[in-house]
Amino acid sequence: MSTVRPEARLPRGFRDAFAADFLARRKAIDTICKVYAVFGFEPLETSSIEYLDALGKYLPDTDAPGGGVFALRDDDGEWIALRYDLTAPLARVVAAHPDLPSPFRRYQFGSVFRREKKPGPGRFREFYQCDFDTVGTASPAADAEVCAVLCRALRELGIPASDFIVRVNNRKLLNGVLDAARIDEPSRRLLVLRSIDKLDKFGIEGVVQLLGAGRTDPSGERTDGAKLEPAQIDLILGLLQCSQPDRAGTCDAAERLVRDSESGREGVAELREIHALLDAMDLPSSLVTFDTNVVRGLEYYTGPVFEAELTFLVEEEGEKRKFGSVAGGGRYDYLVERFTGNKVPATGASIGVDRLLAALAKQRGERAESLPGPVIVTAMDRERLADYQRMTNELREAGIPAELYLGGGGFRQQLKYADRRLAPVVVIAGSNEFERGEVTLKDMLAGKQLSEQITDKLVWRKEQPAQRVVPRSRLVAEVQEIVQRATRGSS
RNA sequence: CCUGUCGUAGCUCAGUUGGCUAGAGCGUUGGAUUGUGGCUCCAAAGGUCAAGGGUUCGAGCCCCUUCGACAGGACCA
Image 1 (tube, rainbow, N blue to C red):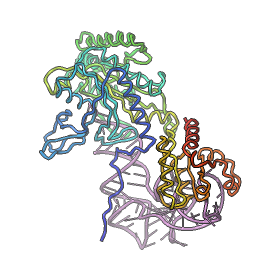
Image 2 (image 1 turned 120 degrees about the vertical axis):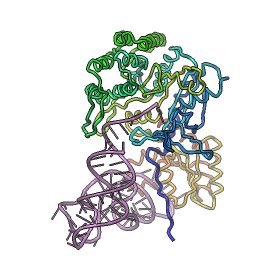
Image 3 (image 1 turned 60 degrees about the vertical axis):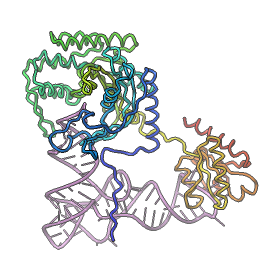
Image 4 (image 1 turned 180 degrees about the vertical axis):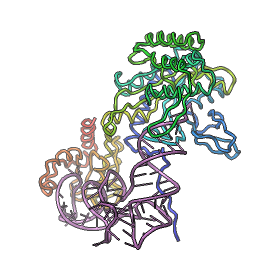
């Protein structure tokens, strides 16, 4: 009889988070959410699953939804899907609760799911986002605040101002230039936006090719171009190159490009207002810049768009690389209207926590150090389990993380276990200690340091310089003292 | 989804034009040390050479298919 065993595997693009990563993420989320709260956003948690049409995904004529989302058919035949961001669910909540205060300012963190065909480093199918939005105002002040929140959050995470930049653009400006260039067909406008989005990937020549005849990648892959006239391409290039170090300068340059396009003029006007408000919040152009190349997604955004990028370089297999965008957002004045028919302007952004943490870990030399583990109470004499359990409990009552050794094996193995768990202290009590009413405490950290000078293992064991014998009644106090010394030393 | 490279022990990798029983380091386990982690020494366990098919007297190596990883491209609300 053969048993079919499942393979202990994980679908690609998903991962497990062990203690160090989990704690680092929770800490980052906590820091970010505190910033959101300071700016007056309140928490909201929505369900992980939504109806597919509420997410904005419509079924093609096939019987399965298109790529990108994890969807399944419910018992009643309706398509439901895992959320792929936190914004669409917010729109649903706002549409379903007309009694909410307006503007409604909420933040939310949680994992979102995307059915990526090709996940890679920094690109997963489940990842954490910290999102914040203001729903119900068209005021550019809300957009300026988005930038301020992003800056503050990144600063609170310990990133110096010189290591990141927030870029702002306006979709109305992009549309204005498309108008000015007389590119009318929606499909071609989309192609142009896509090409602009690839600027940092292929450089200016690559974008020119994509706007014109097309581009053949070194890998041999051919991409069709937008087939624009040279004059049109020049206009787009003008847009790509009009960003200035200072925001006002960029506005001036952009204004000349959009000519008489109404949308373009509106876009520039909004940027000017945002600029003034950023000044009022002491956010200089070096921190929040206007960058006419930012596209951020192809539909969905209707006005200002934001992107936060880490600017330091990361060493990767000998090559220095930019890590790229760690947060993004923008104004979307259409999402709620989809449900209710009422125009409800909204703006916000989202921080990609996993990407951000990965970048920081890379920069600060790989591994986040593991935190100290619990005190381990060893069980040398299995007949005295109750005594060991009592000691463990006393430590816990005092708030010291402690664990009674529950595994099998000899005493040597118990110490190996304690070592692996990064225990700061090991409590030892055998017949010797019990007879005299004492316990032995082993300071694992001190032991580690002293062990560098070991010459003779047998002598080392006999002397045990990192151990002390204390009265049983002093157990908690003495352990406390060693633990405090250890945590002070490590942090 | 397209193109390319790769897949050998838990991990990192050797493995000669296709030729005897597929190796090393690290890790794991046991012992030296009947009550002591981290140093040292000794020993052991651990492999369907990704899977399936083909060529060959003979395949880890060559050919085909599938799966997976990596890199680039397409797509990315």
